[in-house]
Figure 1 (spheres, one colour):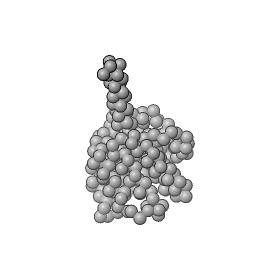
Figure 2 (figure 1 turned 90 degrees about the horizontal axis):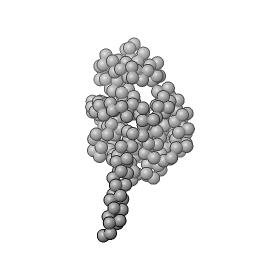
Figure 3 (figure 1 turned 135 degrees about the horizontal axis):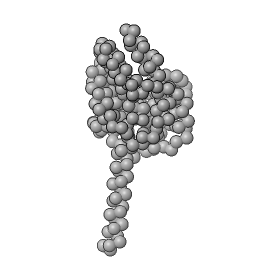
Figure 4 (figure 1 turned 120 degrees about the vertical axis):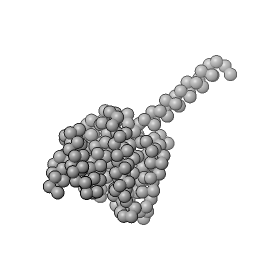
Length: 235
């Protein structure tokens, strides 16, 4: 082998390794500069997210916002949700090979949830199965842990389990403490679910403390500040 060929191979492998590392870290690093999108989430202004989703390139980073935007539309306008869910699924499949471990299963689980809510699917248990599979692929990824916690939190009995959901959220919380996650909307959402889990378990004081701690970090979280915490205190 000529020296130039050897060096070319080394460079090529170097590119592969760098690309792999980038792919595996996308779930955190790409959120560092997302303060504007985080503020929109905290202030419940989904028009900012819509503008981002309608114009951004299809990347693993984009899927995190498509997932959240579809969930928001489920609560406000299901007619508008259907085409965005279809687009979300197309994008998942389009960049499947570049997603971090477990994220394909996580996002496809969300698609099944949305399709069920839109009465476009007859597979009620597929979503939870994929959520658990995502954690098996990525047991130390706070996004997969948080998503599976959400799936268990909302799943009907006997399939849902608030205790297991809380365990997953608490594990995700520890991993979300890295500063690079601060501008990721999944972080305050996870902290909100922790408070709600304690509330559901009848531990109102702990839920209040958790909600207050969340507001100390994200004082503009309007739902927690103006609705959830005041109602919780009145209980």
